[in-house]
Amino acid sequence: MVDGSYSASHLLTAADLAAGPPVIDVSALLTSDSVDAGSDVVKQINKAATSWGFFQVVGHGVPQADIDAFDAAVKRFFAQDKD
Image (cartoon, rainbow, N blue to C red):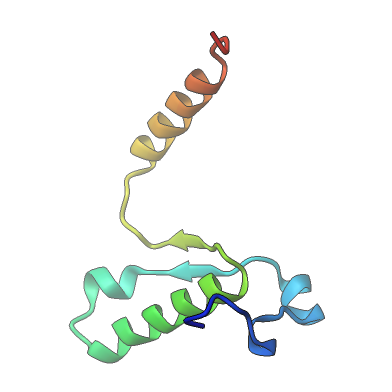
């Protein structure tokens, strides 16, 4: 995909759409010494990024309190006046 065009392999099937956006567990990247485990996660990310354009990451180890604080900060930011 060097030229920016997409091939048929990048099209989502009806089954893909029904299943919804990919959810990828990246915990193997943080906990495993196995190259195979990391390689599998990288393949999943590549497939999700090239077919869907985005994906949800789980198993990342970020504490829920940090996620909640980030969410609250984003809501405060976008609740501001445009000025």
